[in-house]
Length: 148
Length: 148
DNA sequence: TAATTTATGTTGTTAGTAACAACTATAATC
DNA sequence: GATTATAGTTGTTACTAACAACATAAATTA
Image (cartoon, rainbow over all chains, first blue to last red; front, top):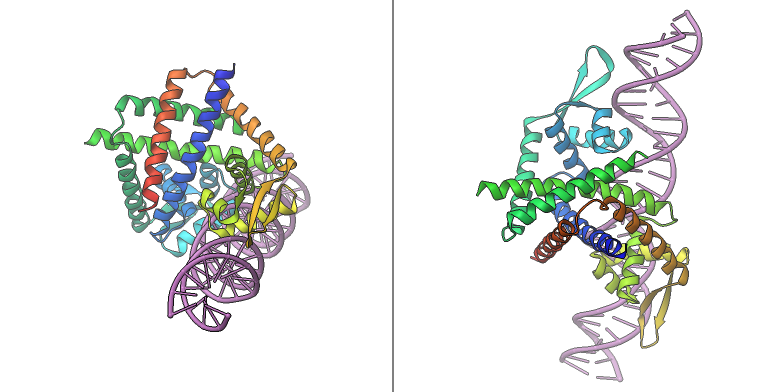
């Protein structure tokens, strides 16, 4: 089915372009706020998934624990996260956000959302919803394949 | 308009998720083929935009010329690109692909397209086309903002 | 024509991203 | 009590990417 392949190619190219532009924009914006992209992602994950252990945070972010450890370390130095020891397990630490960390994430997030909103202000809600559905479908399908 | 903001937020999240999964998948796949992601992107750009000077390649990729220089250098060592001196301008070099470079890009590209095709095989053409339109619109709008 | 300015690429340096392996310390199992 | 497994950190390596400084060559201008 050549039509399907053509659509797949067009979609692939389009997603690639979107990724590049998005990343570029986000990186610039995020880095102007005292944190790197990975650090911001860790803040986001902690906001959304609550206090987590390091390994759990790494799993959520699809990163190695060693990488995550260093990202968390820089957030610690900037006082955006806290390490709480688990009295029941001396090895484990609970990572949670400081008020400053939470505030920083919300500031960055809000501005990026506003930016996105201004990009789609002329697009019909129907098209957006259709896109949303497909993007979520693509993500889900692609993620399912990561395990195999 | 809260509805628009909600849509913007949902879309932003969805795109972010898609970016992460896409990148993860592409990186794994590309790196199993003797080139890095950036190197593959340079191959792609040379396939699509023909022979280019280094600065022009950097512009196409939205990268600094120094970064591009090093990426090209590694492709040179692997004999996927050629540097041709411009007799009219002793400073300039023309970058073009070797047959091996072109073949490698097509191999990687084909497989990634097939992967994408299998992801969308159950999605209606209408939804895909709508999505394509919006993604292209988003990309265009976002890119227009990069200059300012 | 000679001097300055601009353009093309490369190299030095720095910072961020990210994995794998090796390691320490603690907990769980046998 | 000895072994095995788990949690996190550190050493090492490679990639991504920018800015600044540099050498060289071309273009401008005085």
